Image 1 (cartoon, one colour):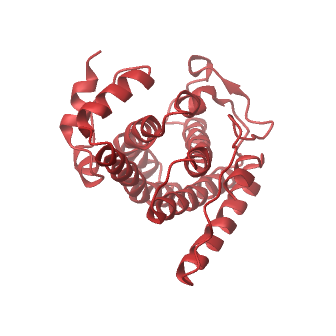
Image 2 (image 1 turned 120 degrees about the horizontal axis):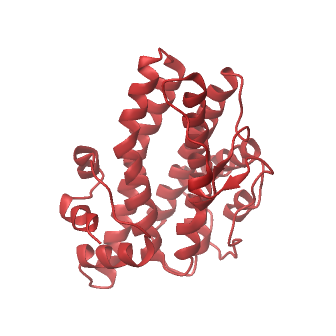
Length: 262
């Protein structure tokens, strides 16, 4: 099921399949007949539509957020992030199927993938209402780099993707919501508020299962987190941090503040 999502290119088709498989998973769980966890060979990179063109971050055009074009660019970037997140969560299920994990692990990541699918479609709806669509602008080519870098390191993936990259979303989303409030774009504000509320849970899943694996291996979570982020994240973490939401997601300040220094 995970690999089928990862090998579907079109964004709307990918997310429809993601919703379908999530519903199948949870229906089986509710019936007390959970789907058997198999093994999989996911592609190193997920299937992607022909558009958007993927560029180096420094080559993606910057637009002023005070303009309609700038707001469309922000939404397009968010849609790109959400589509990558759908694949990242299904990849977490398929990539590390050799690691024995409780069924709750799969519950969490299927739920996260299902929610990211909803987020992608909410933002696509906003873009289409503005006369644009996902694929109309260039996008960031580096979004999948963290997944490739951690393709053989389960704890590294949990540290860098939910606990660093998705936690960054908690820091920046309130500012984006303010931009759309000023523009009186209520549909985009509502969509971003849904994303903001649910992303806390995704970061929390990362923290929960990272701590679970640290406990399994009798390792100090903070020390391991610092080592893995320094190994796989090709930058320092940049404040300001949304300390309240990070704490709600199970990431205390002594996890991330030391990583602001190289």
